[in-house]
Image (spheres, rainbow, N blue to C red):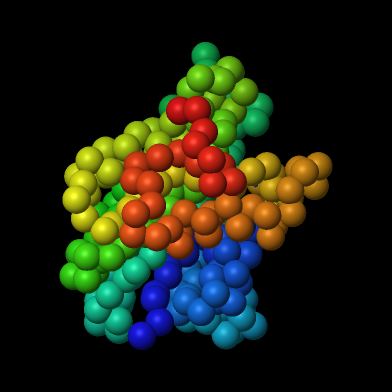
Length: 227
Ligand code: NAP
């Protein structure tokens, strides 16, 4: 039976390219997006499965979990790709608390809640690959005051990865954080050096790790990154 991969925020950017490449590798892809029209359209073009998912909504996560359980009863790979960067002009001393909360909800809490909801579908078969799409901007060793909320949310996402690695010790469910690279997308901008294929390739590396692959790391292009 084909392995099943679920990807969040996959209507465009790195998520969509990751869905395309995972399909080419022979996975059964469940593409998800918060915008149903757009997501359904790209899923139809790609001939992959689709489910509407707003990662910041607890109801939406519950509905998706019930669907995955009833429809497949298993999940092999979860790619927490959806993310937002809303604070290019903010500074740590004046960024509104509401913006911090919104970004934490989507970039940090949503991946954790999705993992908690879907983990039983991986534990059933003692197989899972979880990729938290993080960023080098979340590397605390290089912190400065540019995009303060984005950095903090990705730092905390890396913390989630570390803790889950401990919780999942001894299982064949591997969870890792990945920096996809600075990629030409709506978020990365036209001046980014990497194309979509390279960005998705970095994500897929962690999604397809062998059983003796790393647990609880932070990687770029298959190499460890500074926390
Ligand atoms: P993008 O083109 O802006 O795509 C972001 C995706 O996330 C969109 O599909 C967006 O959906 C989705 N999303 C946002 N909030 C959501 C929600 N509440 N529920 C479901 N989906 C939601 O950005 P990208 O560059 O492909 O980024 C993908 C990931 O890579 C992000 O986690 C980002 O932080 C990370 N990253 C990117 C770069 C880069 O250079 N591009 C570098 C480092 C890390 P809508 O279309 O509905 O907005």
